[in-house]
Amino acid sequence: MNLVELLEHFKKEGNYGIRVYYGEGIGCDDMDMPQDERMVQIVMAPVGYLGGVRKLLVIRMGKLHEFDVSSKPEKVYNPPPCHVISQPGYYAWGTGDSINEYMRKL
Image (tube, rainbow, N blue to C red; front, side):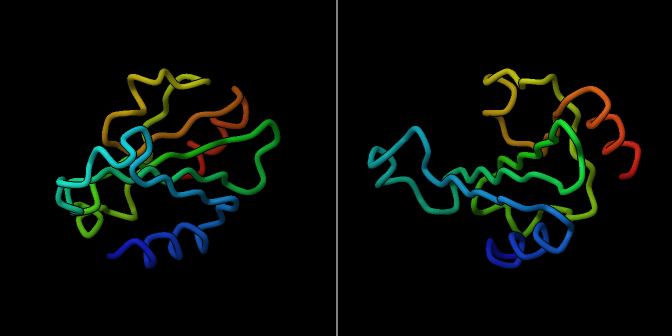
């Protein structure tokens, strides 16, 4: 699955406000890094959770085709620690009742 297809899947899944960060925190220092090695962060907000739930996918461009769209995000603290969500993975966080309800429905 390429980036556009993945974003379309997340949109159809019921997420709004999907934001993509590419090269965040690196800038032009990654010019000699192959594109497949660069990190992408995709931030989503599922519809219908009072108080808010957020999801984050952190993945290398070259691994997008390997991402299992049926996988469940890992529940992390709210707010998530930067050292956790800077690592590749699929995460979810939110206010107590909202995140618990969201995770229960997955």
